Image (cartoon, rainbow, N blue to C red; front, side):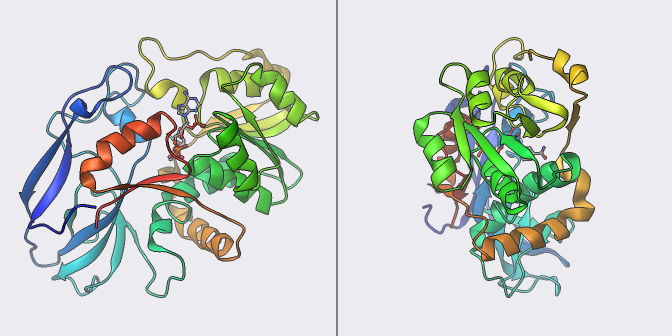
Length: 340
Ligand SMILES: NC(=O)c1ccc[n+]([C@@H]2O[C@H](COP(=O)([O-])OP(=O)(O)OC[C@H]3O[C@@H](n4cnc5c(N)ncnc54)[C@H](OP(=O)(O)O)[C@@H]3O)[C@@H](O)[C@H]2O)c1
């Protein structure tokens, strides 16, 4: 972990990667801790959330967001911070805040750029608000409940199932009475998906015949496929969908680091043949439902129905390597960086 320091340590975007990022695409910069004005407060950040969308913002190769960052920009990302100085009575010392304030050890806010503050009487660990009880869990909740129109009778298939969103989605679906099958990379991750996260089965997309593996795990077909990946994994899911099935598109992991053309999808004919509904979503579309979603997620965590795992890197300097590792599957559950 980084020592307490007089500096604000930031990770800046330096250059666009071609394919998988390298540490050379980032720059670590020390700057003075900012001072606060009237109505503002200073956060000492405790956790940074690393997320695949940050790869898209870096551009290079194929990226659907077009690469929003410019060299020298602060890397975009959510942090959880503690108020350590305040000139805003609504944010007294000791308040814990979550917001997209960037990859840095300290940040100034006036409250307007925050997602939420952690309830003072919270009974779950702080880090959970960066994952299962934060935007990760909310993403899973939105994709299943709003976009996916989940029903208790559904057989649900979920890709990147050992990851943060996927592991939460599977357990939310189980808690709602569904049969749940995961897709993950390798036997060790598949075992975590069944034994730790309680999915009914898990298939390995790195082993041969994913289409056949899904069919064996769900002989009666899939009603809802929560897609985190796209490409070949989506193609295999499409081949197994039941009539009237729903596919909330949450992300395109197969494409984020692809060099050249993005991966294509086969079995598109199934969309009309089986009258499928495919709909992309971004959880920020549903800010009006965040409180409801978080309340439900906290209940699930407290009642033991939503187990979460974290992979935590140590110190801001480790953020680039942890990010690169996550993009290659080095994480189980939520990838965080502990900053203090
Ligand atoms: N729509 C929204 O609002 C929203 C919000 C948050 C996240 N997301 C999306 O949700 C998805 C999951 O995000 P997360 O934060 O929970 O990350 P995560 O799943 O915890 O971490 C990424 C995982 O992706 C898997 N992966 C990497 N490359 C892959 C590939 N080519 N094919 C299949 N799997 C691959 C790896 O697991 P394996 O070892 O199993 O390969 C890795 O552990 C991402 O697509 C992300 O963009 C969307």
